[in-house]
Amino acid sequence: MSSSTVVTPAVEPRSAAAPRGSTRPVPSRRARGGTAAWGVAPFAVYVALFLVLPTVIALATGFVDEDGAPTLDTVAALGDPFVLRGFGTSIALSAVTAVIGALLGALVSYAIVSARPEGMLRSVIDAASGVLAQFGGVMLAFAFIATIGIQGGVTVLLRDLAGIDIFADGVWLYESPGLILPYIYFQVPLMIIVFLPALESLKPQWAEANATLGGTTATFWWRIGIPVLWPSFLGSLLLLFANAFSSYATAAALTSQGQSIVPLQIRAALTSETLLGRENLAGALALGMVVVMVIVMTLYALLQRRADRWRR
Image (tube, rainbow, N blue to C red; front, top):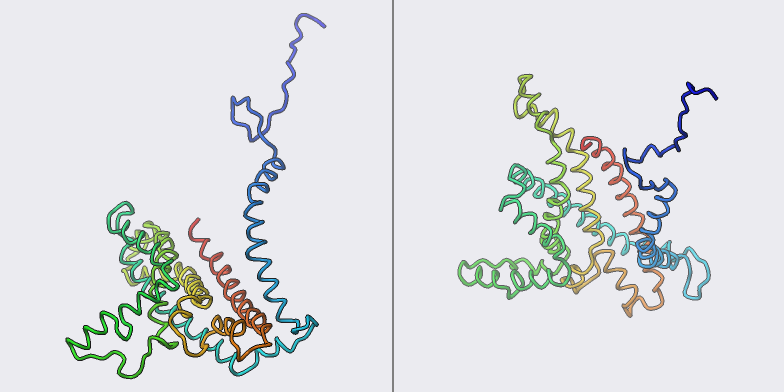
């Protein structure tokens, strides 16, 4: 080798993901995937034990008789008029409370979207929505009984001071129509939680472009705001429907006469003496509920995918 030859030292190839000047080894994609898999393993076990396995067992009971032999007779019971009336009542109750909750929640979200995120008003509403959306079950039923029950505080005041008897036409609070008020109580806060981020995703540049082109406020909402928000609104509406359709404890605590909705029919199939020997009917009813929920959540996922395009 001559003295004028330039020798280039050998340099080991460095990963493209490694930061410049860093000497720490960068884990490969396979290694990162393995670490992530171990990280979600506890959650996967939890879902398998407390969600997937009970669901499979509940659904499987709808396809066997009392002796464990395969049969479709239990599933055929879904066509019973009593069961169909329960599904109709559950769907109607869920739809009414979802629509009312979605409209009221959207109006409240629109009213507070311009408030400062760190301000007192926004903090109070965010905190209240988070708490009230989870305030259901027996606690909520007792709150309504103590407030507008037959001897509730508001009921007695209206009757004694104003001569107004809210139960003059019957004790509606303990029947299916009476469930609308308690359900709306937790539907509106849930709508605020899920719909407020969609309202915040409206970019100020869109309003500026609309104003620059001579558009009005009505033009902005008709041509920009509503087309952008309707997938999020419908998705939130479906989420509220699913929330009401699967609710059990509030209805069980308030309605003691009759099994008007499907969750209460499942309880009756498991505990009632009049349906003794037809416990597997609960599995068939659960199958019907799962079918409805799968349809609703599939539509919700499709709408959320469409709504996410505007949040990027």
